[in-house]
Image (tube, rainbow, N blue to C red; front, top):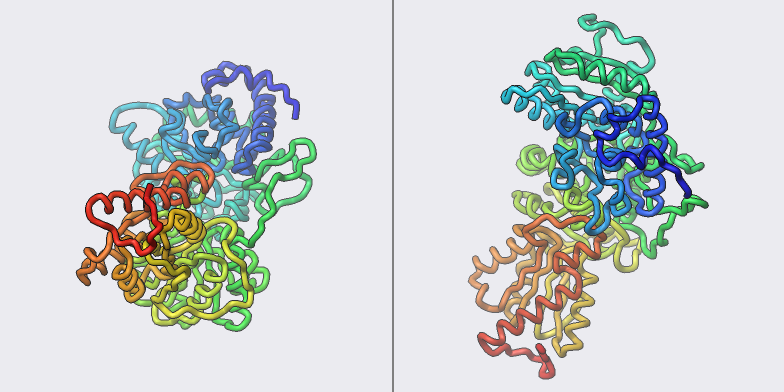
Length: 616
């Protein structure tokens, strides 16, 4: 893909944009779009959202004095053009790779990123905080929050607008209306924005005033988000306005504008894998096994065919959770509630009171936003809501903001909650069956992103016995108790230990809560070293095991080696790189076990039953 970018080549930072003749901005926008397409062909990544805001990004940096004027991107899927124009062009092809640029805005990466993001609906709150701090300090800089029509459906955005409308601080909120979040936008506000696009907006004070005006905002638009001249004129007028009221600028854009692909895409090429810039064929390794997400979706569909009480709920992630497939079969039994995890959880709780069987499918990192509802509206009332927690553990290129590190802690802490984690595809199917059959209270099962382990069996629908694990390998010297999808790494570690003459027992815990106390206590009493492997943060399954052993006065029976995610946020990279960093790949597990055996052997004789064992 040969490109000539003479204007872009002159841009090192936004001050260079402000030196351009306004007539050059349209050409600069074309060059930025071409550069993003070229970079994406090599790196993949979030694609469609950035292509849709190229002109808006150029206009914002042209008109406003960033970074003195604060520019906040909600979620920041759309921040690739922003990164490109703020001194990070040369690093753009490292984005989402180990040691490279982060895929979202990040304060430590650039002074042009005044607020880090990756979860939605935070920009107006953060922007209002900055605007009020500015006023208290007597400064006069501008604060601009750019939020999509999907993200503005999130409850936190409403809370922020409710506050901003009466605070009396100047805040510019740009609503980037492309009719999408990741999937097509849903809900009444999205419909209201569509109405504003199709008819003349009444003046302020009229009984038909827009939603934003009723909250105390001035409202401009809609304006064409790809007309650079109109954008510059509108933003310049706002920059020069000395009013203290907050203002909404409704900008209409096209997600994925200018993408090179001929085939239509339901998510407007929200995210792509690398592709050949000449043939436009995507470079993607063919999956050898179905993804955990697809295993969950197909299993739930099978059960729903037999049980009409089963319903599915997602928070603006139908394809990410696999519920788009469920909706194809049961369109009236799948509910996309928008970016509204709190509502999703309590909506599910309400359904559970009416004896429905709601499956609330939400990414681990996003379920954090609905935690009070999980506690107060579900667990406290012991309602049988089923939580399908996708993207558990480390998720790769999306990094720490999207890691599912904490769900084992926050779900297992709750009375009445059952928590499961499958080690392979068949185990996930059995956990879906268990959740369908379980009506005694809330139940959760968490599973990772990516291809499943093991051999899938679509006909497997046997429920598990609650709180019972299983022995996978029998040994004598070391016991490894694994919870979740690190089982393959534990298998490899057991094989490597065998090469050292160390016979290993491998157990699949299955349940983080209730734990299988009989299994765990038996292993502690019969092995000199017990290793507990958990792809979650400190405070989860391992902590529950140790608590039980302490209560039972069994902590001295064996040396216990807990292996969890470290007490730190793990940077983006491939999942394999992240698990290596965390010490939870097979090599890391073996290294820690061998070190523990050496350490314990130096303190007291270890009675390994395998006579040939060596710890060299």
